[in-house]
Image (cartoon, rainbow, N blue to C red; front, side, top):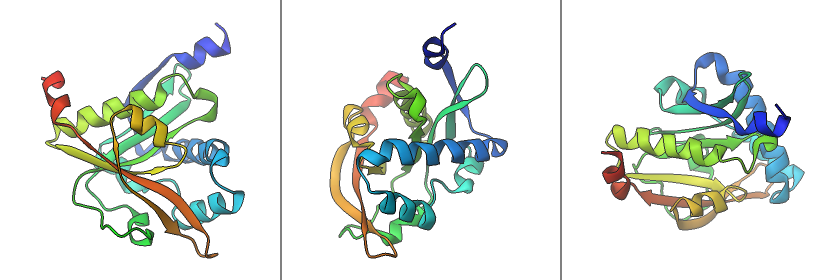
Length: 187
């Protein structure tokens, strides 16, 4: 089996607390490599230092998923929560995040891009949210993730930025999707 074939085979499962170190490592690699086309090294470093890539509590809630290959390598991650993200208070936007469930910490390993990993994570996340009564999901997308979310039907609510300690700004996009139409497919 070639490496390309090996990377195209994965499955999505619930994340476990023991996965957190591998998840964080993949997420930081993703931010540096994939985010590097949209943000300066200083902006990425500031974001990672101030906010990190995820709250461990999201894994404990039981709505956070990983895509894993046949060797157990984590190729992607993401999920949803009703908890307010740490970065919510640092947003320079004019709108307050609503109480809608929030998609959090969706990342794909740079070596696994363009293989449907992000879409698979989001499909599992959306279905899980529907199964738990969510009618809408919101998220704050990095600039590198906006195209994926648009393809999945998320609409821009607001272009905003997170204020960083060095007075720079980490631009992002608040997005939202009504899940009502998905409910019929899930039934």
